[in-house]
Length: 411
Image (cartoon, rainbow, N blue to C red; front, side, top):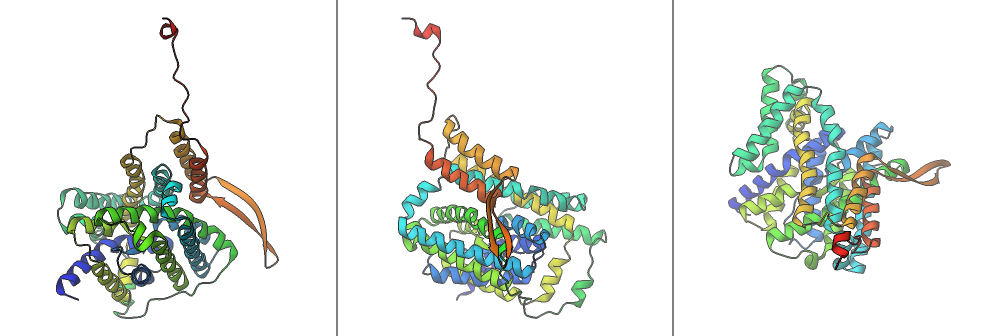
């Protein structure tokens, strides 16, 4: 542990901080628990992967919609935690599958023509949530959004890497000046204390609502590991192996759910820091994890985060959710997907329509404790499943023969 690593680790903590605490703020979970489980989950991931993959695991945005849906359906936070823990087991099943079939076939099952539009669906599905929060105070939302944009576009160095924190900071200061912040919870909170963990409770309804989203986030994980490997210059699919990165991510997510935290995922924010600093030592990421755990033991900090007005959260959510959709578009562009081919159009169109249209596939019911619980696949999970199936079934050449005019037929 050197002073240099401490500073670099702190930088990674700053880069992941805004998004990691934003998810619990949007879903009603506790920011301190999210920080603790993100830090602990990152350490677990590094242990499982042989301490050679430089990633940080933070709160997953893909789980926001199902968590909100579970709460609206009347499930408790404990039941939500059970659903998140079950989602981690889905990762473990995929890890076993990858170990059996090999990473090469995984690349064939999840090509960019499938993963790109699925990521777009993740971002656009959350768009109404961002607009709803922003509508609570459009002035604060616009100021926050503008602050983040200025930081990302016009700043250089570290501040260019933390547009979320800059935007939230600007919006919060304006809210304070306008008297739109309730500071009473801040004064009542202690400086030090244990995070308010919520032990998970397993209820089939919540599990079936939340766990299938892991099918989508597995695709996100595959894309993140590929990107991280390209930045670092190593093939993490081969060593330590995609099955181990999936298992590490899954165990981190299950651990988070058991303690009442949001699901974890590999963070592209920290991969961006790697690209800028060119410091790829995984030790630096583990330092960031330790910083996150230390921050989780300050109720004062958690109370400060909970005083953020809805307008500020809405403004930054507009940017973040739009960025997720943009990453999906970039995935398609970088893969140079040819949309003159009908097969590509069909795969992408099916994913977008089913994912954004809220399609639901009813699979019947299962008896749980004497009650009939509906089995269904919907939203992002259904869209991803259909996209994978279409990509595997449709022939590579699905193009009609070019129309020939009468003039061209004449000798």
